[in-house]
Image (spheres, one colour):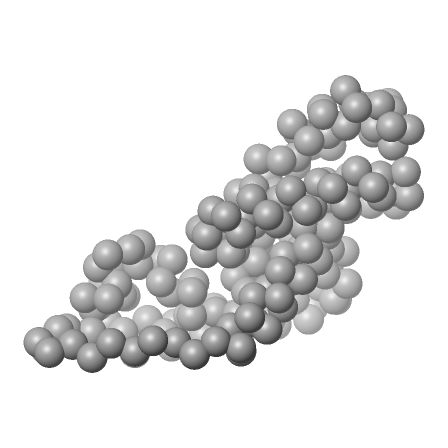
Amino acid sequence: MVDLDRITIEQAARGDEKAFRRVYDHYSTFVWRVVYRSVGSDREMVEEIVQETFVKIHQSLKKFAADSSLGTWIFRIAFNTSKSFWAKKARERDRTVPLIFDRADPVSAFDAFEAGDAAAKVLANLPEEDRFLLISREVEGLSFDELAEITGKSSSALRTRMSRIKHKISIILENKPQLKEAVA
């Protein structure tokens, strides 16, 4: 992703609302797309995460040190904000009891997946952070070096993790041949 010019970034950091609006306009689509895909297309949650991300950016922009690109810095804030929301969701999930409905008629194992996108169903089997990393790398094209800067993990550790994520997906697809056919 091409960063905005240094002057716009400096103006936004000094509190210029028009300059911040340019920052938002330039990066919001990217942040929205990555968060949307990693959260599992829960629009309300995506809106919350994106909004919270840009509130944090607005509050912290004057602290931005140009030792990385602004895009990478923004992506790191989105990543950390997403992680906070995932942790909050996990705590809420731990406090609730799911309703289980028994079906009277026998239904194929794939029926549950026919209503939605098969690829999204595969991704739903992954932990949130793994989805975020997979989408960032494979869909958005971020390099392992950029992901390392964003996550604070080493590039080689992320390569290993990505390999494990892909292996986990292959196991999911092997165990659910109908999904494999739908995704292929």
